Figure 1: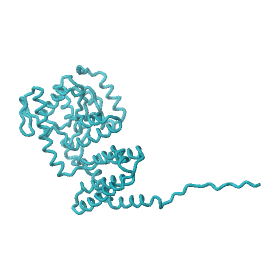
Figure 2 (figure 1 turned 45 degrees about the vertical axis):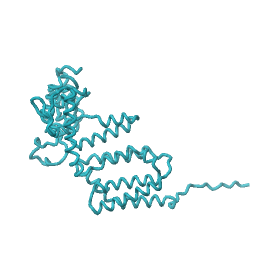
Figure 3 (figure 1 turned 90 degrees about the vertical axis):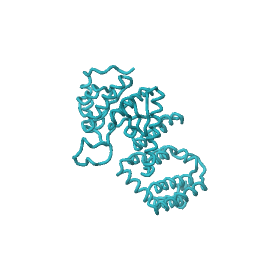
Amino acid sequence: MAATAEPVSTPVIRLADHSPAVLAAIAFAILFSKPAVLLVRDWWNDPDAGHGLLLAPLAIWLAWRSGLVPARPARVSGALILTGAVLLRYLSGLAAELFTMRVSLLMGAAGLVLFWYGWRQLLHWWLPVILLVLSIPLPDIVTSSLALPLQLRASRWGAALLEFRHVPANLSGNVIQLPGRQLFVTEACSGLRSLTALLSLGVLVGGLWLRHPAGRILLVLSGLLLADHLTPQAVEGIARLLIAHRIDGVIATNTTIERGGVKGLPRADEAGGLSGRPLKARATAVVAQLAKVLDGALPIIGVGGILSGADAKEKIEAGATLIQIYTGLIYRGPDLVAECARALAAVERRPSHA
């Protein structure tokens, strides 16, 4: 008898089985295309919102990497949130209000996840969800209403901490009067932009590498970075607080929003932080002042305008324990590292901290 081969069955993908999801995705893209485009535009053009260019793609990648979990769809909850998102999108479009329009975008995405995959999936994606929320810029009315109360509250806390450490302090608005000097909290505050970036970094690191919720919270609440435009009085006041609260170290300094060092040059008026040679002198001055007050109590990482071995030597001689290079490494490459190492080999360092 002749053998007959049995037909091999191949899986057939039926478009009809996926048509509801495809239609929902198309409707979502059409309805929320405008807030998505406007959001990406602000990420690209607004320095205060630029962190979204990193957070949003990272959130999408993290959601894809973590995958799906077995869960029951929450049809009712998802439909209600989707309905609310559509209404909010319509009303915000009428009022031309960008923030609520962007919130409606996230609400719509959350509603779709609930409708198809349920609450367990949304909770499984908690880290991408938080990163997406942090990528939405706060409206100006919120930042302006938050800035002054936060400055006043920080002033009260700072004065209370100083008095707790038996340092005479008299509070007048956002100015802390110390013996022979003043600490202006408005100038010592890094601003809501830095706070958002620090919060995003803390959430990301805590979500990826810390398992205990308490550790994640502590990481988000911790951090210190000095801006180079602080007044000498502010730098000295912060240095004493560093000692009082046994902080492990300090970085001096951050990029600057000042434009004095590039005044008159092309693109000098562009927004954003300025790094490199224009802030070298001021950064070194902050390092020297911190070293004088701290007197070896904790390490200082000197940053700002290091483009040669002589610049690195200058930072160490000013009192830095370590140096950090970034802009110089971009322009000069690894050769700068070797040059700095040779220049620092013969430097007589200050006594190390205890």
